[in-house]
Length: 421
Image (cartoon, rainbow, N blue to C red; front, side, top):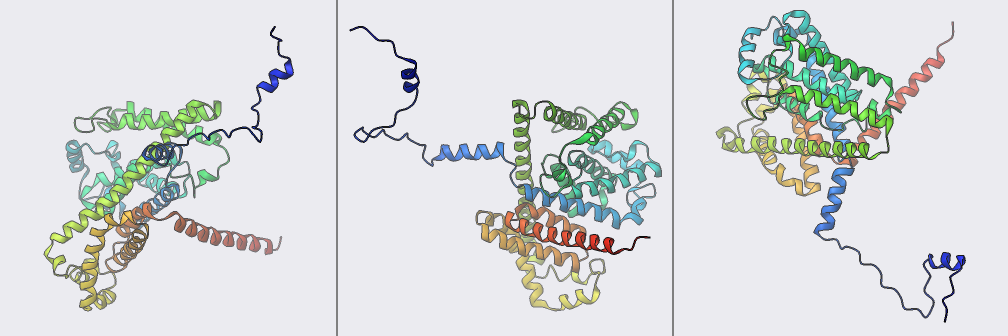
């Protein structure tokens, strides 16, 4: 027999998968990978590189620490020169001697004098307010970092536990994508030209600071000790990445380079959030185990003594009333140690963790009121926000959003009722 060439219709039909008839044997279904360790690792890697994990928690941490630093700066505004300025007992000469040994970053010694200090201090206020609102967060978090380190490293003897937490979180926030929600950046429809202008201005300022002799050893490329990387590659790297992000977003928003950059940003954000969580766990674990070794915590009288010190009694009547109740003081002292030691172990159980977190936040509020440590307490509450459940944050955001909407509607009604001249 001779082969008959197939027609065009037969070629098209051969390319279409035929449905099995009623007598045709059923085709075996393709095997799917089971829920094994490899599949779980694949899903975890996909989430780690393709999702911004904990975006509401990151926004809460950003808002909290922006509020902490802003409240501290405004509260100490009348005493700013005495704390960090030209009238401080810790003179600039003594500060420079210490900075020569530890290599800490601060821009206050660059020029000295009151004018430069006032400029840096009020820039710190503006940076904290910008972080609080989430305005141009890539730039404002870097300015927030510089101003926090500049003021705190100018006089290291003024800090306490809350200042140390702000110091650390100022570094971590730079590497998070903390403005994805609850920020002005999230409401901006397009990047706009103001961001490019801000990027150019900051680059020019950084170049002047890098080349100017006034910066001293602050903007070095390498350091003698660990991690042997100076602040210059950090700042220039952040500046270059921000420019590359904008260029790829305008030229190739759907291209592979932009997708790769986005995946890297997600991984850096997720790592930074993990470090923040680990830092909070480390703070509570070390505090709890150190308290276990103290004799005053062992006999349950540790809380009694600060309640009778004038330095820690902003409300003497309330402190005296609480301090006179020996049984509650004993229970709170033991309960504090128990909560801090048990906190790392409750992370494996969501309900226990949420309940313990609520108790610890309430305890920080009590410390702020009874012992007069509002900045420390607010800093710890802001750090605890990294463990808050997303549902609770969404509920709080909806409540605050509803209050804001009602206030805006009332304002519009009042403006409408104003008679025209």
